[in-house]
Image (cartoon, rainbow, N blue to C red; front, side, top):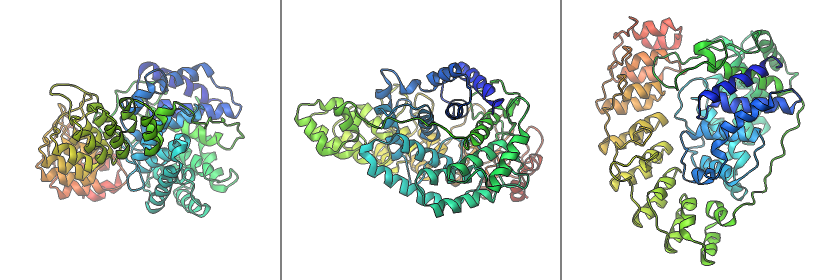
Length: 555
């Protein structure tokens, strides 16, 4: 660990100097790792950690932080972006404030059928529904407003049910299933069963692989050991000791661990790579994440002095009432002379509060509809706002960071999508970031919303300059259930991009751990014989990368 900590600090400092936006692997994970080390008495570079936190927490601090949080200005992909950001804040001991509570409450409102989704699709680090769910649970446990304790427990109960009922495919799935159950307060017998599933994936060499048929690596082994300890396994357990030995014997001389990435397709799915100091080129970022998890696993058994969190929640009473109080409390506040317009944006996620504020003279605009659309299940609120004169779309030609329809497609709120389309929202209008409603629905994995958008006239023929079309994107993002919807809309299933890749070629290249993408594409008429620019068919591509499951489905 002493060898790993300096290079983790140096690499994080290099990364955040070159890139401004939040990264799970080089922002959240090193903050968690370095604070774990500090709490256990190890020497760390405190100046580097302070600089890292200044960059990481910039959206949580400053005069606009709360307004931006309420209006979802920086909303991108709440799990893992917001969930890991709040976990890093918890590791750093950031005291509870309204900004953090707003983010936690919105996270809770994004839960659907017990779990959370993600628009990220970079296995193993950022594509698992189990990771999205567990990190959301942990963030909510840290920063959910105390007034909403009943809601929090309902969220946890629903998460426990989903985690217990859903079978993990990968070690990432299984590890975060254990973590999610532990953080959501599962019973000891439930945790023991989940631990048993995770332990059953351990290889004879002592480590855990990303997927069945792969070699063990430090990323999966670190996550597995961390999850096992977090759920109550002792470091004297035989499985733990074998995993620990694997990590110790596979660490490189510089203190890092080399982990091979599964992101081997040529599609541009991440910011452009640059080195942050680890010697692993294309594998660098996953190796950095793996090194963090390995160190956290080894640190987890050492005695610590954890932070004492400020849970008082005592802040601006009026705004707090609008955000988290009851409708009766809000009405009392208004009756005593509070300005309804200053409280509207903080209340738009609850229809009864919106009704009271409109009755007291609130004047809604586009920002109120946009803010409401950043939550799930807000169609009733939005209907009230629209009836009071708020527009459903920005003015023609205006560029806004998020349109209400794009946000509703992010949350998966079908009722809000239908409502906005019914009142004239443009089904093809892109936000300032370039995201269209249909592309957003594909990335987050909502086939019914994709179908509704197409029926409303959304352009399903979008093709990037690289030649990637929407069926390519449904494949790259791992959403097999969207492929038949797009095929029905006549999106070309055998189109090739600038690398000669059809969607089936991408399905043969990216191993998500199952064969659903290959099967869906073949049913849609995908050709097995079209070769990429390297001269390989999809079957030859799968064999080239040793993807035995995918090759079997392509034969």
